[in-house]
Length: 494
Length: 96
Image (cartoon, rainbow over all chains, first blue to last red; front, side, top):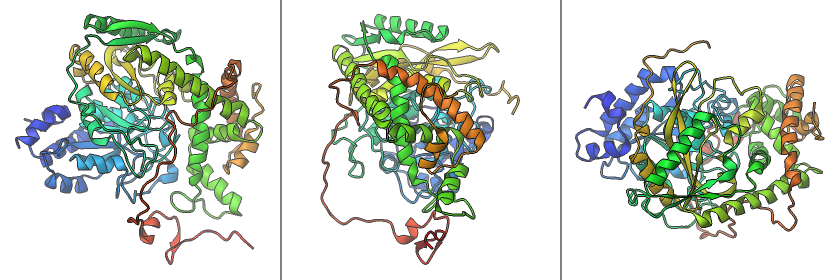
Protein backbone atom coordinates (compact mmCIF):
# COMPACT_ATOMS: atom_id res chain seq x y z
CA UNK A 1 0.00 0.00 0.00
CA UNK A 2 1.25 3.50 -0.84
CA UNK A 3 1.85 6.00 1.91
CA UNK A 4 -0.97 8.26 0.72
CA UNK A 5 -3.27 5.24 0.57
CA UNK A 6 -2.25 4.44 4.13
CA UNK A 7 -3.15 7.85 5.58
CA UNK A 8 -6.60 7.65 3.96
CA UNK A 9 -7.56 4.55 5.98
CA UNK A 10 -9.85 4.60 8.98
CA UNK A 11 -8.49 3.40 12.31
CA UNK A 12 -10.55 0.21 12.01
CA UNK A 13 -9.03 -0.44 8.56
CA UNK A 14 -5.51 0.34 9.74
CA UNK A 15 -5.49 -1.87 12.85
CA UNK A 16 -5.48 -5.28 11.15
CA UNK A 17 -2.62 -4.15 8.87
CA UNK A 18 -0.60 -3.16 11.94
CA UNK A 19 -1.51 -6.32 13.83
CA UNK A 20 -0.54 -8.55 10.94
CA UNK A 21 2.64 -6.46 10.56
CA UNK A 22 1.87 -5.64 6.96
CA UNK A 23 2.79 -2.11 7.90
CA UNK A 24 4.85 -0.89 10.85
CA UNK A 25 3.88 1.84 13.29
CA UNK A 26 6.88 3.75 11.98
CA UNK A 27 5.57 3.62 8.39
CA UNK A 28 2.14 4.73 9.54
CA UNK A 29 3.61 7.70 11.37
CA UNK A 30 5.70 8.61 8.32
CA UNK A 31 2.59 8.44 6.15
CA UNK A 32 0.88 10.96 8.43
CA UNK A 33 3.93 13.22 8.41
CA UNK A 34 4.09 13.13 4.61
CA UNK A 35 0.41 13.88 4.32
CA UNK A 36 0.70 16.85 6.68
CA UNK A 37 3.69 18.18 4.76
CA UNK A 38 1.81 17.77 1.48
CA UNK A 39 -1.51 19.39 2.38
CA UNK A 40 -1.50 21.23 5.70
CA UNK A 41 0.08 24.33 4.15
CA UNK A 42 -3.30 24.99 2.56
CA UNK A 43 -5.35 24.13 5.65
CA UNK A 44 -3.42 25.19 8.77
CA UNK A 45 -4.80 22.45 11.01
CA UNK A 46 -1.65 21.88 13.10
CA UNK A 47 0.03 24.23 15.57
CA UNK A 48 2.88 21.87 16.48
CA UNK A 49 4.15 18.35 15.82
CA UNK A 50 6.78 16.27 17.53
CA UNK A 51 7.61 13.49 15.09
CA UNK A 52 10.97 12.88 16.80
CA UNK A 53 9.38 11.80 20.08
CA UNK A 54 6.52 10.11 18.19
CA UNK A 55 9.00 7.99 16.21
CA UNK A 56 10.49 6.69 19.46
CA UNK A 57 6.98 5.75 20.62
CA UNK A 58 6.26 4.12 17.25
CA UNK A 59 9.37 1.94 17.51
CA UNK A 60 8.12 0.60 20.85
CA UNK A 61 4.45 0.42 19.88
CA UNK A 62 2.58 -2.72 20.93
CA UNK A 63 0.42 -3.30 17.88
CA UNK A 64 -1.75 -5.79 19.74
CA UNK A 65 -3.22 -3.03 21.91
CA UNK A 66 -6.61 -1.63 20.78
CA UNK A 67 -5.03 1.51 19.29
CA UNK A 68 -1.47 0.14 19.09
CA UNK A 69 0.63 2.32 16.77
CA UNK A 70 -2.20 4.66 15.73
CA UNK A 71 -1.16 8.35 15.58
CA UNK A 72 -3.82 10.63 17.11
CA UNK A 73 -3.89 14.44 16.89
CA UNK A 74 -4.66 16.43 20.03
CA UNK A 75 -6.46 19.75 20.33
CA UNK A 76 -3.93 22.22 21.69
CA UNK A 77 -5.84 22.73 24.95
CA UNK A 78 -5.13 19.20 26.26
CA UNK A 79 -1.76 18.81 27.98
CA UNK A 80 0.76 16.35 26.52
CA UNK A 81 3.93 16.32 28.62
CA UNK A 82 6.87 17.92 26.80
CA UNK A 83 4.73 19.32 23.97
CA UNK A 84 3.48 22.92 23.68
CA UNK A 85 0.00 23.65 25.02
CA UNK A 86 -0.84 27.15 23.85
CA UNK A 87 -4.66 27.06 23.80
CA UNK A 88 -4.06 29.16 20.63
CA UNK A 89 -3.51 32.11 23.00
CA UNK A 90 -0.68 34.61 23.07
CA UNK A 91 -0.79 34.33 26.87
CA UNK A 92 0.47 30.71 26.61
CA UNK A 93 2.88 31.13 23.70
CA UNK A 94 5.95 29.06 24.47
CA UNK A 95 4.25 27.10 27.25
CA UNK A 96 5.26 23.45 27.45
CA UNK A 97 3.08 21.02 29.37
CA UNK A 98 4.90 19.61 32.40
CA UNK A 99 2.43 16.73 32.74
CA UNK A 100 -0.03 14.58 30.79
CA UNK A 101 -3.79 14.93 30.79
CA UNK A 102 -5.49 11.72 31.93
CA UNK A 103 -6.92 11.21 28.42
CA UNK A 104 -3.35 11.22 27.09
CA UNK A 105 -2.28 8.59 29.65
CA UNK A 106 -5.31 6.53 28.65
CA UNK A 107 -4.69 6.91 24.90
CA UNK A 108 -1.08 5.82 25.40
CA UNK A 109 -2.16 2.89 27.55
CA UNK A 110 -4.27 1.80 24.56
CA UNK A 111 -1.22 2.13 22.31
CA UNK A 112 -2.03 5.39 20.51
CA UNK A 113 0.63 7.97 19.68
CA UNK A 114 -0.26 11.62 20.43
CA UNK A 115 2.11 13.27 17.97
CA UNK A 116 0.81 16.79 17.32
CA UNK A 117 -1.39 19.63 18.48
CA UNK A 118 -4.20 21.17 16.48
CA UNK A 119 -5.54 24.69 16.13
CA UNK A 120 -8.60 26.00 17.97
CA UNK A 121 -10.41 29.16 18.90
CA UNK A 122 -8.44 30.75 21.75
CA UNK A 123 -9.26 28.78 24.93
CA UNK A 124 -11.95 26.95 22.89
CA UNK A 125 -14.08 30.10 22.74
CA UNK A 126 -15.65 30.26 19.32
CA UNK A 127 -17.42 28.39 16.55
CA UNK A 128 -15.06 28.99 13.62
CA UNK A 129 -11.42 28.68 14.82
CA UNK A 130 -11.00 32.30 13.68
CA UNK A 131 -10.31 33.31 17.30
CA UNK A 132 -6.95 31.52 17.23
CA UNK A 133 -4.10 33.92 17.94
CA UNK A 134 -1.78 31.65 15.98
CA UNK A 135 -3.22 31.06 12.53
CA UNK A 136 -6.29 30.60 10.39
CA UNK A 137 -7.57 27.09 9.72
CA UNK A 138 -9.45 26.67 6.45
CA UNK A 139 -12.29 24.34 5.62
CA UNK A 140 -10.87 21.69 3.28
CA UNK A 141 -14.13 21.54 1.31
CA UNK A 142 -13.90 25.26 0.49
CA UNK A 143 -10.78 27.17 1.47
CA UNK A 144 -12.69 30.45 1.73
CA UNK A 145 -14.77 29.03 4.59
CA UNK A 146 -14.22 28.18 8.25
CA UNK A 147 -13.84 24.57 9.46
CA UNK A 148 -16.15 25.26 12.40
CA UNK A 149 -14.91 25.46 15.93
CA UNK A 150 -13.62 25.49 18.41
CA UNK A 151 -12.01 22.11 17.56
CA UNK A 152 -11.53 23.27 13.94
CA UNK A 153 -7.93 22.12 13.65
CA UNK A 154 -8.79 18.61 14.85
CA UNK A 155 -11.75 18.43 12.45
CA UNK A 156 -9.79 19.68 9.44
CA UNK A 157 -6.82 17.39 10.20
CA UNK A 158 -9.07 14.32 10.13
CA UNK A 159 -11.00 15.52 7.08
CA UNK A 160 -7.80 15.81 5.01
CA UNK A 161 -6.43 12.43 6.18
CA UNK A 162 -3.67 14.22 8.11
CA UNK A 163 -4.67 12.31 11.29
CA UNK A 164 -6.37 8.95 11.81
CA UNK A 165 -8.39 10.55 14.57
CA UNK A 166 -8.21 13.46 16.95
CA UNK A 167 -9.23 14.56 20.39
CA UNK A 168 -11.26 17.71 20.75
CA UNK A 169 -13.27 19.36 23.49
CA UNK A 170 -16.93 20.29 23.45
CA UNK A 171 -18.32 22.96 25.79
CA UNK A 172 -21.29 24.05 23.64
CA UNK A 173 -20.80 22.16 20.38
CA UNK A 174 -17.07 22.54 19.79
CA UNK A 175 -16.61 18.93 18.63
CA UNK A 176 -19.94 18.28 16.92
CA UNK A 177 -20.19 21.55 14.95
CA UNK A 178 -16.70 21.43 13.35
CA UNK A 179 -17.23 17.72 12.65
CA UNK A 180 -20.45 18.65 10.82
CA UNK A 181 -18.87 21.53 8.88
CA UNK A 182 -15.84 19.41 7.94
CA UNK A 183 -17.74 16.25 6.96
CA UNK A 184 -16.55 13.86 9.68
CA UNK A 185 -17.81 12.20 12.88
CA UNK A 186 -17.63 14.03 16.23
CA UNK A 187 -18.63 12.76 19.66
CA UNK A 188 -19.36 14.73 22.81
CA UNK A 189 -19.53 12.25 25.68
CA UNK A 190 -21.87 12.75 28.63
CA UNK A 191 -20.62 15.08 31.33
CA UNK A 192 -18.43 13.02 33.64
CA UNK A 193 -17.83 10.18 31.18
CA UNK A 194 -14.29 11.34 30.34
CA UNK A 195 -11.71 12.91 32.66
CA UNK A 196 -11.06 16.63 32.33
CA UNK A 197 -7.77 16.46 34.25
CA UNK A 198 -5.12 18.15 32.13
CA UNK A 199 -7.65 19.93 29.95
CA UNK A 200 -7.18 23.68 30.36
CA UNK A 201 -10.56 24.65 31.79
CA UNK A 202 -12.95 26.97 29.95
CA UNK A 203 -16.33 26.21 31.57
CA UNK A 204 -15.86 23.42 34.07
CA UNK A 205 -19.50 22.34 34.34
CA UNK A 206 -19.82 22.04 30.54
CA UNK A 207 -16.41 21.01 29.15
CA UNK A 208 -15.96 17.45 27.95
CA UNK A 209 -13.21 15.75 25.92
CA UNK A 210 -14.29 13.67 22.93
CA UNK A 211 -13.24 12.34 19.54
CA UNK A 212 -13.20 13.46 15.91
CA UNK A 213 -12.85 10.60 13.44
CA UNK A 214 -13.56 9.44 9.91
CA UNK A 215 -16.16 6.88 11.00
CA UNK A 216 -18.51 6.01 13.86
CA UNK A 217 -16.59 2.82 14.61
CA UNK A 218 -13.36 4.80 15.01
CA UNK A 219 -15.08 7.07 17.52
CA UNK A 220 -16.23 4.03 19.49
CA UNK A 221 -12.62 2.75 19.54
CA UNK A 222 -11.30 6.06 20.87
CA UNK A 223 -14.10 6.29 23.45
CA UNK A 224 -13.20 2.78 24.64
CA UNK A 225 -9.73 4.12 25.40
CA UNK A 226 -10.51 7.49 27.02
CA UNK A 227 -13.74 6.92 29.00
CA UNK A 228 -13.84 5.96 32.65
CA UNK A 229 -13.13 7.20 36.16
CA UNK A 230 -10.10 9.22 37.20
CA UNK A 231 -8.97 9.90 40.78
CA UNK A 232 -7.65 13.27 39.55
CA UNK A 233 -11.12 14.50 38.44
CA UNK A 234 -13.90 14.26 41.02
CA UNK A 235 -16.53 15.12 38.38
CA UNK A 236 -15.51 12.08 36.34
CA UNK A 237 -18.08 9.39 37.11
CA UNK A 238 -17.16 6.10 38.70
CA UNK A 239 -19.28 4.07 36.27
CA UNK A 240 -18.25 1.02 34.23
CA UNK A 241 -17.30 1.59 30.58
CA UNK A 242 -19.01 -0.72 28.09
CA UNK A 243 -17.25 -1.86 24.91
CA UNK A 244 -18.68 0.78 22.57
CA UNK A 245 -17.53 -1.03 19.43
CA UNK A 246 -19.11 -4.35 20.45
CA UNK A 247 -22.73 -3.24 20.00
CA UNK A 248 -22.30 -1.78 16.53
CA UNK A 249 -24.37 -3.44 13.83
CA UNK A 250 -27.50 -4.12 15.86
CA UNK A 251 -29.69 -2.14 13.51
CA UNK A 252 -32.63 0.12 14.18
CA UNK A 253 -35.49 -2.33 14.68
CA UNK A 254 -37.48 -1.20 17.71
CA UNK A 255 -35.46 1.99 18.13
CA UNK A 256 -37.49 5.13 18.88
CA UNK A 257 -36.12 8.46 17.74
CA UNK A 258 -37.48 11.82 18.89
CA UNK A 259 -37.77 14.81 16.60
CA UNK A 260 -37.82 17.95 18.78
CA UNK A 261 -40.53 20.15 17.29
CA UNK A 262 -38.80 23.31 18.60
CA UNK A 263 -35.76 22.52 16.44
CA UNK A 264 -37.58 23.04 13.17
CA UNK A 265 -37.07 26.77 13.42
CA UNK A 266 -36.75 29.64 10.99
CA UNK A 267 -33.13 30.22 10.16
CA UNK A 268 -32.19 26.67 9.25
CA UNK A 269 -30.70 26.76 5.75
CA UNK A 270 -32.94 24.91 3.34
CA UNK A 271 -30.28 22.39 2.19
CA UNK A 272 -29.71 21.51 5.85
CA UNK A 273 -33.43 21.12 6.51
CA UNK A 274 -33.84 18.99 3.38
CA UNK A 275 -30.86 16.77 4.17
CA UNK A 276 -32.10 16.17 7.71
CA UNK A 277 -35.66 15.48 6.50
CA UNK A 278 -34.30 12.90 4.07
CA UNK A 279 -32.10 11.40 6.79
CA UNK A 280 -35.06 11.06 9.16
CA UNK A 281 -37.11 9.30 6.45
CA UNK A 282 -34.15 7.05 5.82
CA UNK A 283 -33.90 6.20 9.53
CA UNK A 284 -37.60 5.31 9.47
CA UNK A 285 -37.04 3.09 6.43
CA UNK A 286 -34.34 1.26 8.41
CA UNK A 287 -36.91 0.40 11.06
CA UNK A 288 -36.72 3.29 13.52
CA UNK A 289 -39.94 4.70 14.87
CA UNK A 290 -39.97 8.51 14.61
CA UNK A 291 -41.85 10.40 17.31
CA UNK A 292 -42.31 14.12 17.73
CA UNK A 293 -41.08 15.33 21.13
CA UNK A 294 -40.99 18.71 22.80
CA UNK A 295 -38.13 20.59 24.47
CA UNK A 296 -40.13 23.62 25.66
CA UNK A 297 -37.19 25.69 26.90
CA UNK A 298 -35.14 25.44 23.69
CA UNK A 299 -35.43 29.13 23.00
CA UNK A 300 -33.55 29.97 26.21
CA UNK A 301 -30.55 27.69 25.86
CA UNK A 302 -28.24 30.16 24.06
CA UNK A 303 -28.85 32.79 26.75
CA UNK A 304 -28.35 30.33 29.60
CA UNK A 305 -25.26 28.93 27.96
CA UNK A 306 -23.52 32.27 27.38
CA UNK A 307 -24.25 33.44 30.93
CA UNK A 308 -23.01 30.26 32.61
CA UNK A 309 -20.11 29.54 30.27
CA UNK A 310 -18.73 33.07 30.50
CA UNK A 311 -19.21 33.17 34.29
CA UNK A 312 -17.18 29.97 34.64
CA UNK A 313 -14.62 31.20 32.11
CA UNK A 314 -14.08 34.47 33.97
CA UNK A 315 -13.21 32.47 37.09
CA UNK A 316 -11.11 29.84 35.29
CA UNK A 317 -9.09 32.41 33.36
CA UNK A 318 -8.21 34.33 36.54
CA UNK A 319 -5.24 31.97 36.81
CA UNK A 320 -3.56 33.74 33.89
CA UNK A 321 -1.96 36.52 35.89
CA UNK A 322 1.60 36.54 34.57
CA UNK A 323 3.12 35.10 37.75
CA UNK A 324 3.68 31.36 37.39
CA UNK A 325 3.51 30.69 33.66
CA UNK A 326 2.66 32.32 30.39
CA UNK A 327 3.01 35.85 29.12
CA UNK A 328 3.99 38.69 31.47
CA UNK A 329 3.81 42.40 30.64
CA UNK A 330 7.09 44.27 31.01
CA UNK A 331 7.81 47.20 33.34
CA UNK A 332 4.58 47.43 35.30
CA UNK A 333 3.98 50.61 37.29
CA UNK A 334 2.19 48.74 40.08
CA UNK A 335 0.44 45.43 40.79
CA UNK A 336 -2.85 46.35 39.11
CA UNK A 337 -0.97 47.48 36.04
CA UNK A 338 0.97 44.18 36.12
CA UNK A 339 -2.22 42.09 36.06
CA UNK A 340 -4.27 44.43 33.87
CA UNK A 341 -1.67 44.81 31.15
CA UNK A 342 -0.51 41.16 31.21
CA UNK A 343 -4.10 40.14 30.51
CA UNK A 344 -4.75 42.96 28.03
CA UNK A 345 -1.69 42.03 25.99
CA UNK A 346 -2.09 38.26 26.40
CA UNK A 347 -5.77 37.66 25.65
CA UNK A 348 -7.56 38.10 22.32
CA UNK A 349 -10.80 39.99 21.76
CA UNK A 350 -13.29 37.13 22.18
CA UNK A 351 -11.67 35.94 25.40
CA UNK A 352 -11.77 39.49 26.76
CA UNK A 353 -15.42 39.84 25.80
CA UNK A 354 -16.30 36.66 27.64
CA UNK A 355 -14.30 37.60 30.74
CA UNK A 356 -16.18 40.91 30.87
CA UNK A 357 -19.58 39.28 30.39
CA UNK A 358 -18.80 36.54 32.91
CA UNK A 359 -17.50 38.98 35.50
CA UNK A 360 -20.58 41.13 35.03
CA UNK A 361 -23.13 38.32 35.48
CA UNK A 362 -21.34 37.24 38.67
CA UNK A 363 -20.95 40.75 40.08
CA UNK A 364 -22.81 42.08 43.08
CA UNK A 365 -26.27 43.27 42.13
CA UNK A 366 -26.47 41.19 38.92
CA UNK A 367 -25.73 37.68 40.21
CA UNK A 368 -29.37 36.86 40.99
CA UNK A 369 -30.79 38.39 37.82
CA UNK A 370 -28.36 36.64 35.46
CA UNK A 371 -26.23 33.85 36.93
CA UNK A 372 -28.65 32.37 39.45
CA UNK A 373 -31.62 32.67 37.10
CA UNK A 374 -29.62 31.04 34.30
CA UNK A 375 -28.78 28.12 36.61
CA UNK A 376 -32.47 27.65 37.34
CA UNK A 377 -33.38 27.72 33.67
CA UNK A 378 -30.55 25.25 33.10
CA UNK A 379 -32.38 22.89 35.44
CA UNK A 380 -35.57 23.33 33.37
CA UNK A 381 -33.61 22.58 30.19
CA UNK A 382 -32.11 19.49 31.84
CA UNK A 383 -35.61 18.29 32.77
CA UNK A 384 -36.83 18.89 29.18
CA UNK A 385 -34.24 16.41 27.93
CA UNK A 386 -34.89 13.97 30.75
CA UNK A 387 -38.59 13.91 29.91
CA UNK A 388 -38.10 13.72 26.13
CA UNK A 389 -35.49 10.98 26.43
CA UNK A 390 -37.73 8.96 28.74
CA UNK A 391 -39.98 8.40 25.71
CA UNK A 392 -37.34 7.73 23.05
CA UNK A 393 -33.88 6.19 22.65
CA UNK A 394 -32.31 9.32 21.17
CA UNK A 395 -33.16 12.68 19.65
CA UNK A 396 -32.32 13.51 16.05
CA UNK A 397 -31.66 17.01 14.69
CA UNK A 398 -29.35 19.04 12.49
CA UNK A 399 -25.97 19.64 14.15
CA UNK A 400 -25.66 23.19 12.86
CA UNK A 401 -28.32 25.40 11.24
CA UNK A 402 -25.98 26.16 8.31
CA UNK A 403 -23.09 24.53 6.47
CA UNK A 404 -19.63 26.13 6.79
CA UNK A 405 -19.78 29.92 6.60
CA UNK A 406 -17.28 32.30 5.01
CA UNK A 407 -14.13 33.34 6.82
CA UNK A 408 -14.84 36.76 8.36
CA UNK A 409 -18.62 36.50 7.89
CA UNK A 410 -19.52 36.48 11.60
CA UNK A 411 -16.45 37.86 13.35
CA UNK A 412 -17.85 41.36 13.89
CA UNK A 413 -21.13 40.15 15.38
CA UNK A 414 -20.57 37.85 18.40
CA UNK A 415 -24.29 37.19 18.87
CA UNK A 416 -24.57 35.74 15.33
CA UNK A 417 -21.55 33.55 16.05
CA UNK A 418 -23.16 32.37 19.31
CA UNK A 419 -26.32 31.33 17.43
CA UNK A 420 -24.24 28.76 15.48
CA UNK A 421 -24.48 26.60 18.65
CA UNK A 422 -28.26 26.55 18.74
CA UNK A 423 -28.69 22.77 18.36
CA UNK A 424 -25.65 21.72 20.32
CA UNK A 425 -25.23 23.74 23.50
CA UNK A 426 -28.39 22.53 25.29
CA UNK A 427 -26.82 19.06 25.29
CA UNK A 428 -23.91 20.43 27.32
CA UNK A 429 -26.28 22.22 29.71
CA UNK A 430 -28.16 18.93 30.22
CA UNK A 431 -24.96 16.87 30.54
CA UNK A 432 -26.11 14.32 27.94
CA UNK A 433 -24.13 12.75 25.08
CA UNK A 434 -24.20 13.64 21.39
CA UNK A 435 -22.74 12.61 18.06
CA UNK A 436 -22.59 14.35 14.69
CA UNK A 437 -22.06 12.50 11.43
CA UNK A 438 -22.29 13.40 7.72
CA UNK A 439 -25.78 13.30 6.17
CA UNK A 440 -25.49 15.19 2.90
CA UNK A 441 -24.10 18.18 1.09
CA UNK A 442 -25.08 21.72 0.27
CA UNK A 443 -23.66 23.51 -2.75
CA UNK A 444 -22.02 26.91 -2.33
CA UNK A 445 -22.58 29.71 -4.87
CA UNK A 446 -19.11 28.98 -6.24
CA UNK A 447 -20.16 25.38 -6.79
CA UNK A 448 -18.26 23.69 -3.98
CA UNK A 449 -19.88 20.94 -1.95
CA UNK A 450 -20.26 21.69 1.77
CA UNK A 451 -20.93 18.88 4.27
CA UNK A 452 -24.07 18.79 6.43
CA UNK A 453 -24.12 17.13 9.85
CA UNK A 454 -26.82 15.03 11.52
CA UNK A 455 -26.90 15.00 15.31
CA UNK A 456 -28.13 12.29 17.68
CA UNK A 457 -28.48 13.19 21.35
CA UNK A 458 -28.70 10.40 23.91
CA UNK A 459 -29.31 10.01 27.62
CA UNK A 460 -26.48 10.63 30.05
CA UNK A 461 -24.03 7.70 29.91
CA UNK A 462 -25.92 6.15 26.98
CA UNK A 463 -23.12 6.61 24.45
CA UNK A 464 -23.40 2.97 23.38
CA UNK A 465 -26.93 3.63 22.11
CA UNK A 466 -26.07 6.68 20.01
CA UNK A 467 -23.07 4.85 18.56
CA UNK A 468 -25.37 1.99 17.48
CA UNK A 469 -27.91 4.36 15.93
CA UNK A 470 -25.28 6.50 14.19
CA UNK A 471 -23.50 3.39 12.90
CA UNK A 472 -26.72 1.99 11.42
CA UNK A 473 -27.30 5.26 9.58
CA UNK A 474 -23.70 5.64 8.45
CA UNK A 475 -23.38 2.08 7.13
CA UNK A 476 -26.52 2.42 5.02
CA UNK A 477 -25.36 5.68 3.40
CA UNK A 478 -22.32 6.80 1.45
CA UNK A 479 -21.79 10.27 2.94
CA UNK A 480 -18.88 9.33 5.19
CA UNK A 481 -16.89 8.06 2.21
CA UNK A 482 -16.65 11.47 0.54
CA UNK A 483 -13.38 13.36 0.98
CA UNK A 484 -12.60 16.97 0.09
CA UNK A 485 -10.44 17.58 -2.96
CA UNK A 486 -7.58 19.98 -2.33
CA UNK A 487 -5.89 19.79 -5.72
CA UNK A 488 -8.47 21.99 -7.43
CA UNK A 489 -8.36 24.68 -4.74
CA UNK A 490 -6.02 27.54 -4.05
CA UNK A 491 -6.03 30.12 -1.29
CA UNK A 492 -7.49 33.39 -2.54
CA UNK A 493 -7.04 36.62 -0.60
CA UNK A 494 -5.30 36.79 2.76
CA UNK B 1 -25.55 51.67 22.87
CA UNK B 2 -25.89 49.43 25.91
CA UNK B 3 -29.48 48.39 25.32
CA UNK B 4 -31.40 48.11 28.58
CA UNK B 5 -28.58 46.59 30.61
CA UNK B 6 -26.62 48.40 33.31
CA UNK B 7 -23.37 46.98 32.02
CA UNK B 8 -20.46 49.40 32.50
CA UNK B 9 -17.63 47.72 30.61
CA UNK B 10 -14.92 50.02 31.98
CA UNK B 11 -15.93 49.27 35.58
CA UNK B 12 -16.27 45.49 35.04
CA UNK B 13 -12.86 45.44 33.31
CA UNK B 14 -11.34 46.82 36.53
CA UNK B 15 -13.03 44.06 38.53
CA UNK B 16 -11.63 41.50 36.08
CA UNK B 17 -8.08 42.94 36.26
CA UNK B 18 -8.20 43.35 32.51
CA UNK B 19 -7.11 46.61 30.89
CA UNK B 20 -9.03 47.55 27.74
CA UNK B 21 -8.33 50.21 25.16
CA UNK B 22 -10.93 52.95 24.68
CA UNK B 23 -11.89 51.31 21.36
CA UNK B 24 -12.36 47.87 22.91
CA UNK B 25 -14.39 49.35 25.77
CA UNK B 26 -16.69 51.08 23.31
CA UNK B 27 -17.02 48.03 21.04
CA UNK B 28 -17.67 45.58 23.90
CA UNK B 29 -20.24 47.97 25.39
CA UNK B 30 -22.24 47.69 22.17
CA UNK B 31 -21.65 43.98 21.48
CA UNK B 32 -22.27 42.77 25.03
CA UNK B 33 -25.24 45.13 25.30
CA UNK B 34 -26.71 43.19 22.35
CA UNK B 35 -25.98 39.85 24.02
CA UNK B 36 -27.56 40.97 27.31
CA UNK B 37 -30.58 42.31 25.45
CA UNK B 38 -30.96 38.90 23.80
CA UNK B 39 -30.69 37.29 27.27
CA UNK B 40 -33.52 39.49 28.58
CA UNK B 41 -35.90 36.73 27.49
CA UNK B 42 -34.83 34.69 30.53
CA UNK B 43 -36.95 37.06 32.59
CA UNK B 44 -40.08 35.64 30.92
CA UNK B 45 -39.73 32.31 32.70
CA UNK B 46 -41.27 31.53 36.04
CA UNK B 47 -38.49 29.89 38.04
CA UNK B 48 -40.32 29.82 41.35
CA UNK B 49 -39.35 26.71 43.27
CA UNK B 50 -36.77 25.60 40.69
CA UNK B 51 -33.42 24.57 42.15
CA UNK B 52 -30.33 26.10 40.56
CA UNK B 53 -28.29 23.53 38.64
CA UNK B 54 -24.59 24.20 39.11
CA UNK B 55 -23.84 20.90 37.36
CA UNK B 56 -25.93 18.64 35.16
CA UNK B 57 -24.78 15.67 37.22
CA UNK B 58 -24.81 16.34 40.96
CA UNK B 59 -21.83 14.73 42.67
CA UNK B 60 -20.98 15.17 46.33
CA UNK B 61 -18.11 14.14 48.55
CA UNK B 62 -15.83 12.17 46.28
CA UNK B 63 -13.08 10.76 48.47
CA UNK B 64 -9.94 8.79 47.86
CA UNK B 65 -7.34 7.33 50.13
CA UNK B 66 -5.07 9.98 51.59
CA UNK B 67 -1.82 8.49 50.41
CA UNK B 68 1.36 10.30 49.40
CA UNK B 69 1.86 10.41 45.64
CA UNK B 70 4.40 11.83 43.24
CA UNK B 71 4.10 15.54 42.73
CA UNK B 72 5.90 18.25 40.78
CA UNK B 73 9.48 19.00 41.62
CA UNK B 74 10.30 22.68 42.07
CA UNK B 75 12.03 22.51 38.71
CA UNK B 76 8.90 21.20 36.97
CA UNK B 77 6.69 23.76 38.69
CA UNK B 78 9.01 26.53 37.55
CA UNK B 79 9.49 25.18 34.03
CA UNK B 80 7.18 27.79 32.46
CA UNK B 81 7.86 30.68 34.84
CA UNK B 82 8.28 34.09 33.15
CA UNK B 83 11.00 34.91 35.69
CA UNK B 84 12.62 32.67 38.26
CA UNK B 85 15.67 32.44 40.48
CA UNK B 86 16.76 30.25 43.40
CA UNK B 87 13.81 27.90 42.90
CA UNK B 88 11.37 30.80 43.30
CA UNK B 89 8.96 32.71 41.07
CA UNK B 90 10.29 36.25 40.76
CA UNK B 91 7.65 39.00 40.73
CA UNK B 92 7.88 42.79 40.77
CA UNK B 93 8.02 44.43 44.18
CA UNK B 94 4.44 44.86 45.43
CA UNK B 95 4.94 46.25 48.93
CA UNK B 96 6.78 49.43 49.80
